[in-house]
Length: 245
Image (cartoon, rainbow, N blue to C red; front, top):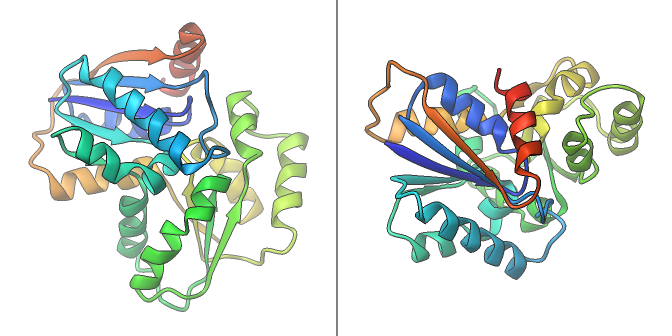
């Protein structure tokens, strides 16, 4: 099977890495819209338009399934994509909530959602969590994390200062949903800041969802990867070589 996977930039490589390691597909086509990153600062209609353009690009490769490895797209454009193409289309929000449920989260637990401005404003995570009985929820937009990851800043004083700025009023969440596929690259620093919290990672959640809901035969070989970007494709490939090794 051939998977098409896209994101606003390099963050979706965290999802790609999880899928690649589990050998669920023979080939993965990755498209990063690096010319227009981040999507999380854009309005709904712009996010939908960008997402449909990414899907049109992936259609050229005759993919069997599409994963939108972007929480902003998952919040605003999944239904539009499904209407546009007759293929299974997955976002990362619903699998993320299901992954939380599998980790024995209790309704009284404090859930912290981190995401871009667009994702947090959509309230999609909160609606799904409310539907499953969770009421102690803090949803926090942390858009500065995206350019830090794009710049390769995963630790150090700049990141520490940014976390102190965002988290000054946050007290010991039980679970943290990393509601942007860039954020797993910051997981070590986030775990140091919140040592008692359990982090929910979009890549791991997608893998669990694929294995539970689709008849996918695990391959004995690692998938072939093809990487594309709307700007600086060589830069994307350099990051992929570093992150996917």
